[in-house]
Length: 164
Image (cartoon, rainbow, N blue to C red; front, side, top):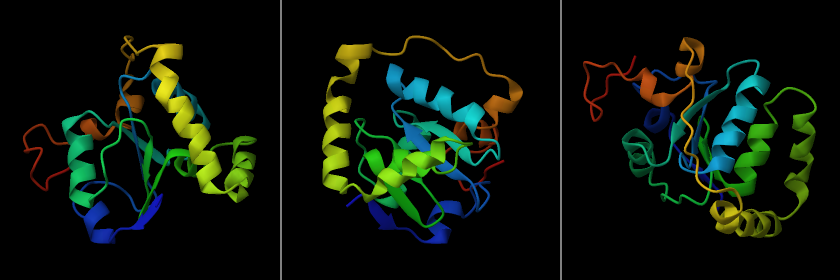
């Protein structure tokens, strides 16, 4: 199932995330995934999305705490009470971007098993086709605020409940 209910407490309790923010977890080693995040950032005028790597300690912890399987072959979108994988996640992300990208959400009517077959096939060969990302981002202070790791108070434990 690409969507599962989460309690508001589980996701937003003590994390420093606004109810309107959505978390995108992506494969930090994937060139395509990094390019997708770089595509989303300038097209997200309301700063709806916060980003994190699936491989990061924090990304892994977020998945584990919510019972979401860790699969590096998918992007994960965590919303207030839901989470989405694969093509459903991409379509939900596009629905929040500036025009014309929300029009892609109309593909939600295509059955998920068809969309996800295409997504999974592409994901299986993405390293072969595009390689791994070896380029580090140049983080401006504004961009850094959009990443989960920057929201942790340096004095708090990753496993504590303190978030900036």
